[in-house]
Image (cartoon, rainbow, N blue to C red; front, side):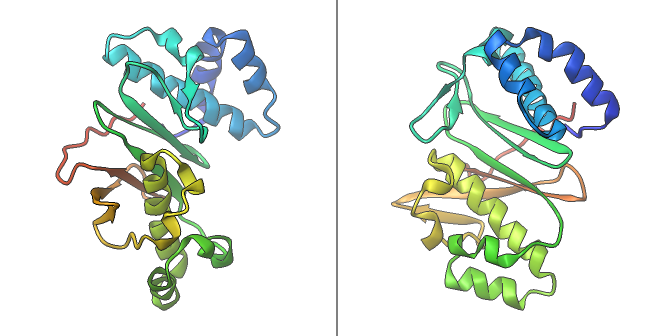
Length: 204
């Protein structure tokens, strides 16, 4: 979902009113407006998935979290949400874990990310003709992988995993990366155990 002015108006009118009182308070307490709309857009995309699966939209008010803070819904497809600036993305999949990460293409400070990269990844970024873009390409794969594994960036294995290839082996399990093209100003990667998969990209 690309958050233009009309989308923001729809989110405020259609999603905010159906939130629980607790989530309304949570949403209203965001200091930055963009964070509030990231939250609402994520809930809107999740509602769309729930309706497609024949589940009650009110389940958005009853999300649970694993010990690492990853949200989930019991007896529903796995889902993962990412946002960056004006883009909010939700990935969902039945009967398997999935992770997604989106980043707006911009100039970045490599020092903010390098603790998560292998020596080979660092060298690849330094030698690339577009170091910032390469840094974000690797970063979105790395973060999508962490989400797929269920621990996010707290997973200590990430720093030792070189994600430049189409897949990685994590303790005997192969996980694959897929680049999704939503908007030319963003890099989006998805991580899952599916090597060949047909992804339905739906924009709202």
